[in-house]
Length: 173
Image (cartoon, rainbow, N blue to C red):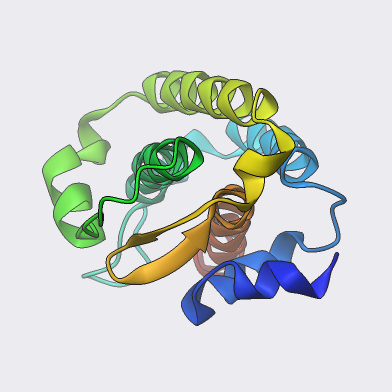
């Protein structure tokens, strides 16, 4: 991957980029990421979906709904930037979103359906962007991002949380 992409996102998001930098494009990263998530939904032991490895930590379902909500927010940002909307965008409080979502009240199949629907919409949006759209930039929560950086961040953020589930949740049960 070209080094320029590292200048298209804030330093905190580079952790996510490192997880998907080996893919040739953001679309490819999202497609491979989708395959991993589809396997995850099929193979994850349902009796562990509400597990928390510490009292104040999120459940697996909280994490999955957080991924869906974050992807919605990131795609919205990408849409605004791709359309040359230079309005400053605010951030969002992920802890407030998780608390308000009450993911543990969802059925596993509902969360899976929400993910699949959101990811299809995300892939459709990114698939129809023109070459110039990918490099357009904007600011959200005072952090600069390109459209391409946001697409990579979605895939990398998902990979990050799946890795956390594997290391802190599956290995603890």
